[in-house]
Amino acid sequence: MKPGFDEAAILAIERPDPRLWTYYVLCCLAAFPLAPILLPIHWFRYQTMRYRFTDQGVSMSWGILFRRQVLLNYARIQDIHLRSNVVERWLGLARLFVQTASGNTSAEMTIEGLTQFTEVRDFLYSRMRGVNDPQAGANHGGNGPVTAGGADVSGELTGVLREVAAELRALRQALPPPATPSAEQSHV
Image (cartoon, rainbow, N blue to C red; front, side, top):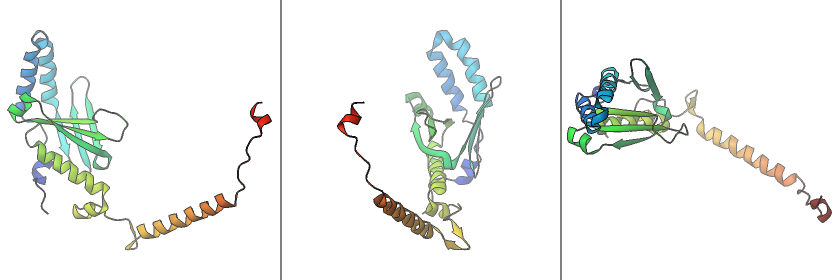
């Protein structure tokens, strides 16, 4: 099955779409009294925002005085949410919230200013599944199943784990049952 995205086009994405600056201006104008403060902040964010999609993961960086960079390996990605408000939909933009298993409830990375957001989401899902699912990984050029000398060792590992579990059960049954405290001992 052929994926619904052009991988080369996604790997070539480095900057947000110029419509993101339009979105930032509209948001700053909505907060009219704060616009003189918010416009320069958003201008520098827009001008310094960079994305990089590689074979190992995705990175995002922005900022002048306080430079921030977020690097995510595809193996760390747990979920991807796609959101857009009315203005973003009108401009043809959306935000991708990429979440990891870091224990944080907010997104680890927010990719914004993309017009091909569904393709990027599908690309990230395919890479995420390619890393986490050995069968999908084999289809996407991943590592595939763990092998030793060409033989699949997952069945071997399962057998060893079953033997360990059986030995633990036998040990548990061989131990005497725990002693229950008498009435006098429990009042002390």
